[in-house]
Each structure stands twice: as C-alpha cells, then as structure tokens.
Length: 309
Ligand code: NAP
Image: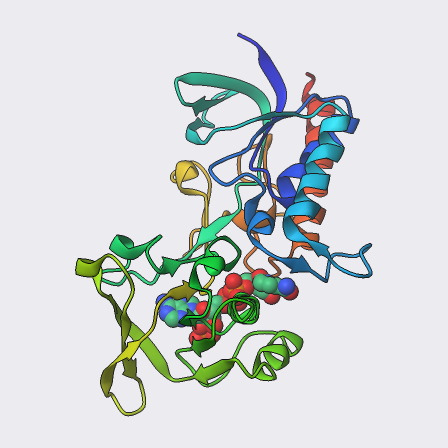
C-alpha cells in the first residue's frame, strides 16, 4: 500500500498553510478536508484582521485562495472525514470511509466546531430556526425578530451581520460583561437594530411540536424569574469545541478537549503535529492558525530528514 510522507487532517487556515508549505517542500501532502471544508472561515463574512487585505476579504474567498495556492504546488485534496486514527505504530493509519490511508507523518488541523447549548428541544429545531451559522441561515429570517446568544466576538459579528435581514436582533448574554473585543462590541452597540439582554440564560427553545422557533424560555440570573420571549430564530455564538475526539487515549488533551502541544506544534507522538484551533485555546485567530500550520509543516520536514522517508 502507498505510504504518504504527510497527511493533513483539516482544511481550514492551519490545514491549507501546512499543505502549502509541505507541498513546496515536495512532500506531496494529502489533505483530508473533513465535514466542513474550509473550516470556520468558510462560515464567516468579512475578515478585516488578516494582514495583506487593506479593505478586508470575505472569509470563503480567503480560504478558497489558500486552497488554490496549496493545490498549485501539488497538494492533493480529498473530501471525507477521518473516523479512526491509529497512532500506535508507524506508518500511522487513518480510516476514511472504508479506505485506510498510511502516512509517515501527520498534521492534525481539524479545527473546532460550534458549541450548542444542550437545551431539551435544541437539536430538534436545528435548521428550523436554531442555527450556529448566521451567514448560512440569516437570509431565511428577513423581516423577523431574532436572537443571538453569546458575548464574544462571534456573537457580535453574527448579531451585526444578521441586522441585514432581521427587523430586530436581541443579543442575549449570561453576564453583564463581554469578552468581545472593543471594536466589535462598539459596532454592535451602535447598531440601532440590536438590543442587548444581559444576565440571562436560555433554558429551552420552543416550539418543537410546530417544527419552528416561536420563543425562548429565558431566566434572569439576578431576579431568578423565567419568561417566554417570542422570537423566530436563535443563533448561537457561544464558542467552539475542538475536533479531537478520534485521538482520545492516544494524544493528550486538556480539560476542554484541546490537544496538548509542546514547542507550539509537537504532540507526544513523534511525527504527529497539531496546529490551529484544535490545539490553540488562547489566540484562535485565522492568522495564528495559519502561522501554526506553517510551524507544523516545517517540523514535518525536519522530522522526515531525521528519520528518513
Ligand atoms: P468566545 O470568545 O469563547 O466567547 C464565547 C461566548 O459565549 C462568551 O461570551 C461565553 O460567555 C458565551 N458562552 C459560552 N458557553 C455558553 C453557554 N453554555 N451558555 C451561554 N453562554 C455561553 O468565542 P467566540 O466568540 O467564538 O470567539 C472565539 C475566538 O475567535 C476569539 O479569540 C475571538 O476573538 C475570535 N473571533 C474573532 C472574530 C473577528 O475578529 N472578526 C470573529 C469571531 C471570533 P462568558 O463570557 O460568560 O464565558
């Protein structure tokens, strides 16, 4: 069976950058794109903080450019989700559907996926008014009153974006302080279509029997009082969970499931490197993900030079 020099799991900023660098080092990387090709940038709108684009660039365009750039140097892309990984022997084994892929080194750039609230009726209403992707689903709520949950940059970005469609956006946050950056918070605060509701949690989303969102059951944490708040949609902007489940028991993770790395991108298994949001709980930016993808690629080159191809 063919043994690859390097396989990259994931096709966000980190994965494409790792692919670009390993392709230019003539290692013919295979990139396994995962469930959500392009990662989080493919679900976002205008990116204003990736250097090199003075007027900003749309997230999907930025990620597509990265993919094209890596492909130009010979990176090979394959759709599909890795269901199993065996890191206990070399070459490493990855299961992609019924296929087994063997590789001397591995770059894990599997990113992070949207976090859900875990409400009793949440799953039943996903795609019916419950969403974690404003750019995907915002259009369906033109002229409606909707809600966004969260107090970070994602929630601010979603709320601001959704005012393009909705008649009113209520941003609901569990505290009265926000972890969003000042510029994003100020932008949301100055938008007359956005109302802020703080110290409030969502206990459930209704009405699953009608197969649409009609209201949220809210609880004010200060007064303890509950009430039903009419709304047509609930968009979640409450952070992400690292996609590292298939490595459980083989690689170290922290309490929240992020892969633990040393010297930026080294896992405890020689030849296996991790980069981007799956291992970075601190910065989580497109540019830092790209940077760590580069580091992982350079370490793969060094590792292969040391152990031989
Ligand atoms: P985040 O910064 O971790 O914020 C998550 C928010 O959701 C927090 O306000 C948190 O509340 C709240 N939350 C978490 N779990 C909750 C729960 N179970 N119930 C209710 N609320 C909950 O995540 P993020 O906003 O996705 O941002 C992640 C990273 O991406 C950040 O570094 C951010 O700067 C970056 N980002 C940047 C941009 C941009 O610059 N354009 C856009 C989006 C994201 P607490 O505050 O109470 O913990």
